[in-house]
Image 1 (cartoon, rainbow, N blue to C red):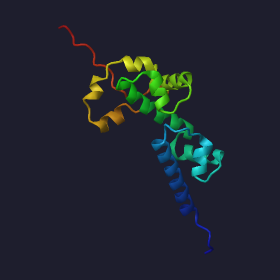
Image 2: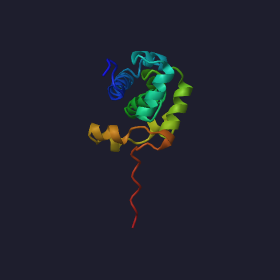
Image 3: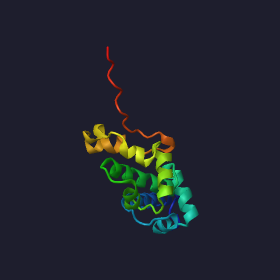
Image 4: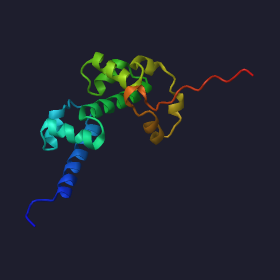
Length: 153
């Protein structure tokens, strides 16, 4: 056997680098990140990194970064922060782009999300809040809806 790694160990090394890149996105979401910067940390070209990331995680690195930013911004909005401050706090540079992406992912504008009653979420353990409020594409988030009014009967 030659000194070259076999395909399985090479794939494992690639998955390790992709996981480290995803962890960096999750940790440093508020920093000025872009795909070339993240790809460099994974020792890959941006195009190769994007293809491998999408194959491993089902979404592009940019979409993962934006979903993470929207997830963090929604927590800030639930806590009462205004939309502009939440936008800037998560590393978005354009309020318009942030609002469009927020609406696309959460299914409602940041302002309407902030104005909604979040008392049900406030009474949940943090682990349930993370899974319940996790953003999903196409407005299909698993967010808590307000309970319907009791029937007068």
